[in-house]
Image (cartoon, one colour):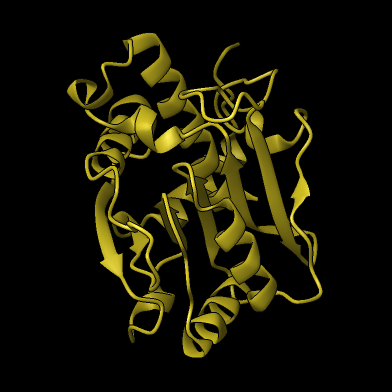
Length: 215
């Protein structure tokens, strides 16, 4: 079947979603446009609600890592085109969140690669971003993606890649590069992408959420 349906996953999701599932967008420092693709996360959450059993999909919440409630959100999202620069307090806060059940999805909107890798080295000095193979469970947690990430927008004529950072064998950071999923989640009028491409991006977003909540 095209959809993966696991009873154990649904049980876990029902437990985790006793309240609305919200995605927390990180407002980081530096010159990066953390606020880019403003329609992306609302569209992804609506697709999640319409096409999966997660009917309690909620809202995009914008946070700073140093906010008192930042650790309340199990799913953090980061994107942008330019420079990401985390303060010492933000580095400590992000490390603490990720070591205590949090998950970060960072999606390169073209231009944040070098700064993101630099900042992740501050968060986890002894860990490296490692490429995930196409048979990693994130590519089959709900929909099947035999060839890994879909390619939404062309940047530097490179294939899309997924990288991860693991904490005790748990994927705590997923970095999607040269794919631009966020652009695929945006309203159709923003980039004039065909629905077929946008739906691939949305389905991949569903996979990431399902994997993060059930791994």
